[in-house]
Structure formats: C-alpha cells, structure tokens
Length: 546
Image (cartoon, rainbow, N blue to C red; front, side, top):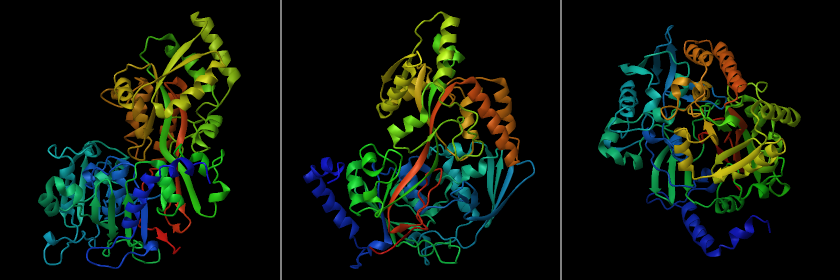
C-alpha cells in the first residue's frame, strides 16, 4: 500500500461518507429522466472551497473563474499561447491613436434557454447586451471586484446590433488582454434584473455548458449547451462532453484518493500531502502511475519572490551590496528540487516570469557563493557591521523556502531570522511599510508584462498601489509611461525587458522561482491542455470509455 494512502484510509468513517456522496453524485440523473449519464461523457473534478458566485461580475477567485468559464463568453478569448482570439466578436479594429476599439459581433450567438426569453426560450446576443454588461460591471451599487478592468475606458456604446465600440481615455496596449477576463462576459438584462443578487446561483450565459444544479458545498452540475456557437477545426460542434460535475471535498488527500481510484478525472497543482507519492525528486511521474495518469506542465504567470522595503532605515536593507549578496547567495535549482520536486522554474531572470513576452533569463542572478561572500565582506568593511542580520517575514505555507534560504545565507556570513505570521497580517503589514523583508508572490491579473512592472512605478506606492517595495527611479517611471504609447508589440516587449533589467540592477527584490501550472489527468482524458493563466477550458475535452 502506498504511503500517501495510509493516513487517508485510516479515516474510514469520513471516507465512507465521502464515497456515499460521490456514488450518488456521479450516477445522478437529470430532472425526471431516469437514464444516467455515461461516465465517459461526464468530466468530474473537485474544488477545495465552495464557489462564491456564478455571476461573472464577481469572478475573482480561481474556483469561481473556472466554473464561470464554462458558462459565459466575452468579446474575445485567450488561447494557450496568450494570443487574443475572436469569441463573440468575430473581428475588431483599433484606431491609429489606439483609443477607439470597434468590435464586430457574430449574429448567431444565443443565450442559454430560459422561460423569461419568451416563446423560443432564448434570443441572440446583441451589442446592447455588452453595453448593459459593462455598465453593470462599473455600477457602484453592484460593487463588482472587476470594475477596475474598465478604469481606462472613457465610454462604450452599442452602435447597432452587431457593432460595439469602446473609447479609452488613454492608450493601453494590454486592453484586449483585459477583455478576456471573465469579468467582461456578456449577461442578459432580463434574466439579471429578474433574479437580481440571486443571479449568482441562476446563471444564464452563452458558454459551452449551461447551469443545471448547485447544492452548495456538495455538488455543482453543468449540462452541454446544444446551441453553442463554436466548432472545432473539422467543423464539429463544441463541446464534446455531455456534462461537468464538480465536488467540494476540502481535504486534498481525500481528493487525491478519489483521483487515484478514478472517481475524479483531474487534479490541479502539487500539494505537499501527495507530491512525493506522485512524483520523483526531479518532477517525473513515479512508475506506478505512468499507466494511469498523464501529467501536463508549463509556465504559470506567477513570480514568487522576497521583497525589500527600500525606505527602511536598516543598514542591511539599504545596502545594495547586501541585497545583491542575498540574490547570489542561495541555489534556486537546489531549492526547487528539494522543496517542489522540480515543479517550478528557478528565477535566474528578472521579475517578469517565463512564459510572458518581455522575460529574459540573462538579467537576473545565478548561484555564486564566493561572489556573495565577497559582497558581504565589502558591506562589513563599509559599514563596520561585523555580523549583518536580516529578518524574513513569511506565512507558514512558505516557511520551508525561507528556512532553506536562511541556512544558505548563513554560509556566506548573513544571520537570518524567519518570522511567521498569518497571511492577513502579512498583507496589511507589507501594504503599510511595516516589514523590512518579506515573501510575496505576484500572479498576473492580465497577460501583459506591464502588470508586473507596475509594482515598481513610483506613483503606485502601497497602500494606494502595488509598489510594496517603494522602489523609485525617474528613468523607470519615464519608460513605464512611454510603454503605454507604443503600439508595436515587439518594440514594447524590448522596453519591458529594459525596465525589468533596471529593476534587477537596483535589487529591490529577490526572485525565487516562476511557478508552473501542473495538471494530472486520468489516461482516458484528452484535449484538456494547459495555459500560463491556469484557466480551465473544458469545451475541447474528450473522455474515452474505461
């Protein structure tokens, strides 16, 4: 018996309850139809916490976004290579001054059927639906967490049924990427105004699947949308599956057991409770799983890092010598091998993560312990501080990483303390400049490097913006503002790299690693794919019979 299963199976009574729930769930029938779904037509996965809302205006958390992505569409969508592609908008144009975006809509996209639509129980999406959806997004009475996506929008209008126009108040090359976010999905006015806040649990969209049933904290079921407008490259209508079934087991060990037994089709991420059971130290599947499981992995737009507060009076943090010594002083590759089973990319580049245009692996720091020791000695000579000392503040989830860095830096002459505090406390303290050195991460809100570089723009000082380090450079600010005016993609990417290189030269941060998306599926699943924003897209997924 595998080591990972022993502690789980010992919870016998809990598992019996789980199995009872799952057996009734996975063999469910629809409405009054007594015929059960065939297993190979149902995609089953688990969420660790309850979904908060199925209303795209509140698509803030990953669990919500994954579910909402099956139900709703927007003007445009992102492919697996971060290219913006048509969706409900079949084409678009951008004015020469990059301020006016004109979207030509398809005329064959229907909302999911609902009796409120009248005789035909559905209707075609028009530009006025997008006008309503965008107005709702910025309505202060709605208080959508996604209202910021339209911060640079001056106004928008439905010119006619198939032409939707957006006017920006300043050029913003990343705007199309913003529109791929689920916040910007289209919703039908008559349904939303009927259900009001209960639209969260009565969603009607245009997506490949339609809402069927939701028992919160227990199960969520979607059915195939037979009127979906997208087809595959061979002209076959999407989606291929008949249904999506989501459970809410909070325990990741239990989730892995269900996956190992074939009761769910997919596990995302690598949890400490099962990483050594599933993977070797080098990140490969162990032999006992190779015949049953597929592993998919690729870059994820997430940079994990340590951040210095640049306005501190502490000599160790003020010194660029010591900040550089810390960057040189530990082996990122070794850290990833021992603490993450090789999942994740050691951060030898800048702050922009691998997988995003603008990334350059030559502008960062490699492991050079002798050079790090020399820099520490120069600091000691320059300041008269014989034993430089720093404190890294972190949460319990990243304690092992900070302890690894602690041990490595002590070898080069730096005394390191590790302070573990709750996540909420750390969030507040870093926003208010109360921490000299802390662990943090930045996951892209939208797939453009400007999102990462905004952390070093001086007008974004926390707590009013994401510049938690209070890094300031007039040259950087000038380049950052210039980037908004550049519509040539390659030219803008080169400027992004220059900006990232400048940041790394000043060392307000210590990049640790660029995360990876890692997904495990049963062998019978195909077409799931992977993407750097870790969006779950099930419209092209197929399952073969067991």
